[in-house]
Length: 309
Image (cartoon, rainbow, N blue to C red; front, side, top):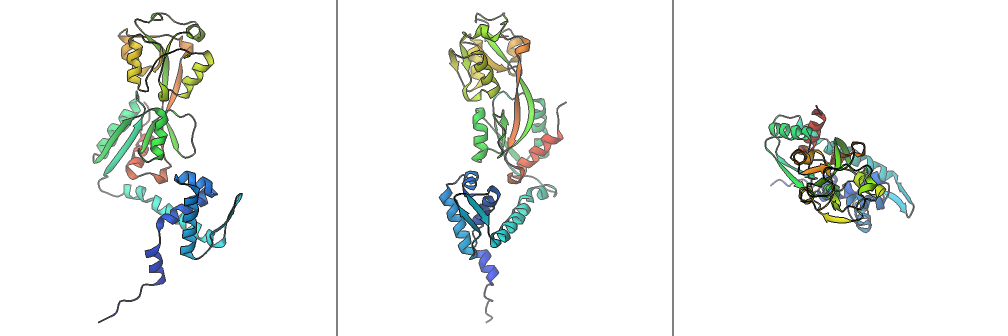
């Protein structure tokens, strides 16, 4: 009976290798030190250090020299770093290569969005996406804007839609639309039918706060003119904030398109002068493209293809 050939050194290496260690090392090299790598990976630094030592033990070579303020790859580390770069570039390109092959795209697309998205472009993108990829299940969760990037980081969402306090280097942003915002009151409020000459004129009026759903542009405006010293109500859901406003509980900053029908029906009144109107930029937010699944990449491609107008 013929004997099976003994596995080669290369076969044993590939069989015993923990590929997650290569990914961790790749992130360490990209980050420049263990602390930043741990932050990107969402792990504690001792765990990242242990993973590095395990990889070094598996390879039988020191990959870097490290101290509190110094990090440098060894010649062996450079070889492994270059191999990791090539490996992850090839693997990261698989979704685009698969997208160009005939066949159906299946999977899930999870969107975390603020309430009151009013964008014809977004509507056209969703409609076109479903027509092209009917086997992708689309799920939408409405969350406060501060939770949008948090969900992306925790991989609880693939795409985020909302304003951005600042442009975080860990994400990619694409402007969806600029949302006009006004200050409104309900029919029973004393300010109904009146236009404030200056914002300071209404500083003593109670305000309905939208908490985590209040973009920074509104927060800065409020603080500049002393609005919101008196809190009349609060809701992180704009539908409920609008309800409180209509019932005369207080003044509230709301997107113009979101309340257009109520204004036309005489249920809400814009309190500020036209010159005091401002806009809040609403972005499509995602992780870097190389980290995205195919259904997410295809949506971003459609967003580039379908512009306003």
